[in-house]
Image (cartoon, rainbow, N blue to C red; front, side, top):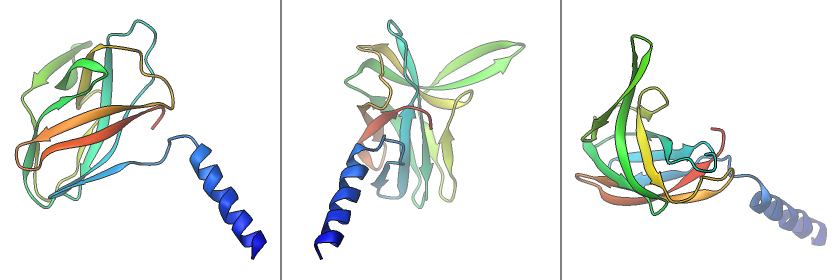
Length: 147
């Protein structure tokens, strides 16, 4: 009995010490937000792209804004490469259609933290608030590191 308890205690301790590489899921009424993440930023960086997935969409909704205490503002953007130039367009939202999966990814649609208050550090987490037309405000945690 003591050996089993010690092993369980050791396992729990190791789980607490492991890096934040596991997925973080946030359940809304009608969809799931999966693993908001960003890469580490350099000292002096003013922007940071943010990526995530909307999955299991059973009710139509729309992401209308995002914010973070770690940035002056967060925009929803779409990046594209046209004639060897990267262009970014600020969007007014992201439609979540029933039955679809929406990935916010590099060189596509994603969030962009602007006017960073501090650099994003590897294996740290930062608050990220998402606002939807129907589901309302959902507070998430942005993980920093390789996805």
